[in-house]
Amino acid sequence: MSAFILRLVVGIVLALVIGPILVVIIAAFSSGESLSFPPPGFSLRWFIEFFSIAQMRNAFMLSIVLAIASACGAAAVGLLGAIYVSRNRNAFSVMLQMLIMAPLVFPALILGLALLLLYKTVNMSVLPGLFIAHVVVCLPYAFRSVLTSLQSFDTTLEEAGQSLGAGPVRSFLLITMPIIWPGVLSGWLFAFVVSFGELNTALFLTGPGIVTLPIEIFSYLQFQGNQLVVAAASALQVLIILIVLFLAERLVGARQIVQR
Image 1 (tube, rainbow, N blue to C red):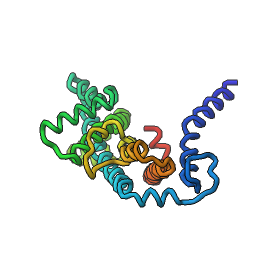
Image 2 (tube, helix red, strand yellow):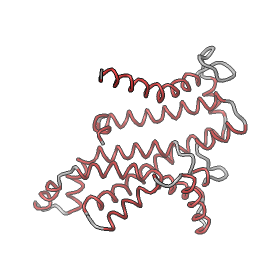
Image 3 (cartoon, one colour):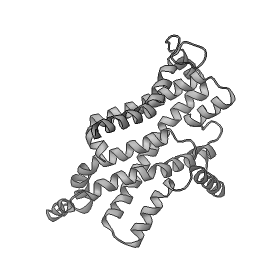
Image 4 (spheres, rainbow, N blue to C red):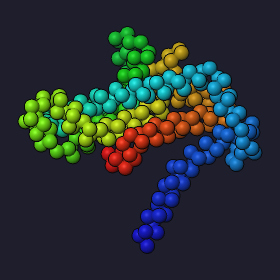
C-alpha cells in the first residue's frame, strides 16, 4: 500500500512539474500560428523567428554569459564563506551565515529595489550592478552546497598534509578541494540555473541594450506577444540547462551532484 502511495505521489508531482514544461517544448515546434496542443504540425519556424529578433538574440546571449559569470562568482564567494563558517563557531560565523542566506528570506522585488537605490547612490553602471545582483541572489544556493560538503569532510586529512610539510593553501588545494569538488560544482549548477531564469530582481536593474532573456520574454509577451516565440525561448532555456547538467554529469557524476 505504501509503495502504491509513493508511486502515486511521484506520478502526480511529475505530472504537475514536468507536464507543463513538455507541453511548452512540444508547442515550440508547432507549425501553427498560435499556441495549441497538440500542434497541427511540426517545424522549426518559431526558433528561426526567435533568432531573427535582435532583442531576443542579444538577451539570450547576455543571459548565458551572465549566468556563467554569476555562477562562478557565487561559487567563489560561497566557497570562502563556507570555509569560514565550517571552521569557526562564533557569533560572526552565525551572522555571516544569516547574511548569506538573507536573499532567500527577503522578497526578490524588495531586494531589487534596494540594490537599485544603492547603485544610484554610488553611480554604478548597469552591467556590473546586474552581475552583483545575480551573484547575491545565487549565493545562498552555492554556499549551502559547499557548506554541506565541508561539514562532512574529515579535517584530519588536511592536518595530515600540513604535518608532512604542505602549507595551508597547498593542502587545501591538493587534499580538500578534490574531495569537496562535487559540492562546489553542485552549487555552481544551482547558481547557474537560478541566474539564467532570474526575473524579479533583475527587473529593476536592466537598462537600454542590457536586458536578460526572462525580462525580454516578459516584455515581448506583454507588449507584442506571439506565444509560440516565447515557447521557443523557453525550450531554448531548458536546452541550455540540460546541456550544463550533462556536462556536469560527465565531470563528476549525477549521483554525487544530487547527494549535495
